Image (cartoon, rainbow, N blue to C red):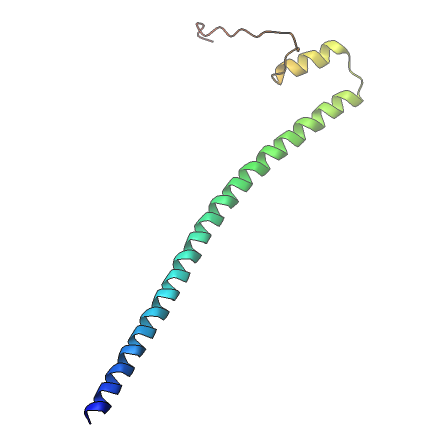
Length: 101
């Protein structure tokens, strides 16, 4: 009778240990899943931001190609490039930080 109780106690301990192990594995899986979902959401936001930048660059490239195809005069091309922030290779740009404009 004593051996029977001892075996039952050992079996219960094994089942409890198995349950705790399974619980730990499931909890670990859920934590990793949530972590991956958070990382995925952050990566998707970054991807959308990069796609917007790419779209802006494509539009800029299309504008430049349109200008090139129209064979516009050099002065107009230089004016458009300056408006877009481009400068000549040897040119230095000075910015007046003291003005209120």
